[in-house]
Image: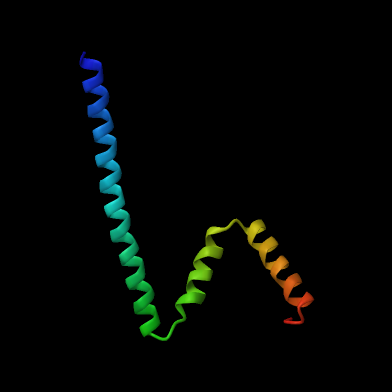
Length: 80
């Protein structure tokens, strides 16, 4: 009979860990938002900064492919 109790305790511990991590994630998300607001107050464009952050996360070959595709689409639409 102790196995169901052990399983329930283990499940509860997992749930509590997830809840703590979710709370930490929210705090970090708020901190990131604050940095963007601070940068915006200094005259930087937050949308462009977000794009740069996203691009820096990508591997070089994936970034090159995405940029080439964007240029192709822009040229096709006369935006080049």
